[in-house]
Length: 450
Figure (cartoon, one colour):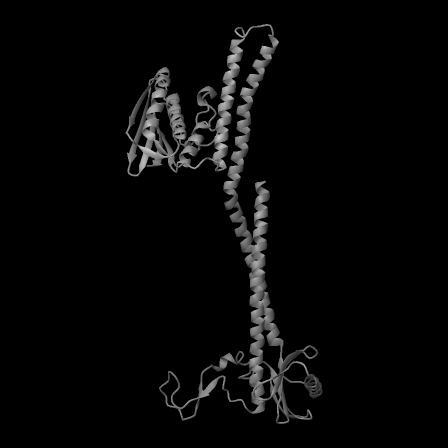
């Protein structure tokens, strides 16, 4: 299940990533194509002004009386000052005519369509083909736009000849047209699209690896919880199976002695009751943990007297400690109040004292301290006896976990006590920890907000 969930996570994440990348690259590519087309048109308009005799290099130079900016050298009045360097309009040295941004050819025509003047800038066209294309452009009524100078302009692309054109017709009975080689434009667009494709594939691969890593990282807690749940169900089933088996066996024995009195079969009845009580306690513990997992436990708002709860539990365990030949000592400060449930706090203290007395060993000692430390109320339960190993310490609050495999079920319970204790502490917004060493013994420490 976790593996399928991980694959689904990666698949959904990659769908979103690929969609975002495609949209982003499409927008960037569209913007680049538009800017390239605008650059081509800007250059063609410059060439159109040149053939019209109006080109004054106004886009690259302005006339100014005075000095060149940043240069103390005096210039003659009216001399042009270059603001945009020539290399922005030139190709690499030796490849094209200086000043040629892209190959083009310009025509000046009379009203009848006869060519009056031609300006060839690294692009040549057959006269017959040029006349045919010019006639086709000026014969079309679509694609023309008027400007404030009274002239009409048409900018477009001809598939038959694979050239860009910019045509102009005004009121002076003259017509002008500029043709530009589109190989420059196409090469730039093709190069940009290839780069974009490479970026897209590289980003997809990178995000695929990242998604796999994130899936493993994000689902690690879920995988652990799934394993714990499976182990929990298996352990709970096993623990429930034992008392049920004993109860059924006892009932079979009772059924086989139908003529016997209750007094004669009292041991089987008593044993059945003990197993039923154990099963009831186990089910109650499981229900408590299930409610805790589902955040279904009631919100704690009341005030509880922890000092009174601790004294009550210590008093109840004096007889148990005496039977186990264990010395039970307490150091409890008075009037220690916490926000919480007295019932749950008593259950917490019962679990801690039960474990301490049970595993203190013969002639052992248990010391319970309840005191205030700054804004916390601390419960400390220390016992002598068997030390919990460093390997077992991180797992002692897990369900059905027993630090010592040699502890009998009759002594060790079901391995749910400390897990319930941890949930009670979390319910009270506190913390619980455990330390164990041969010199200091085993100490459970609980800190609750005062």
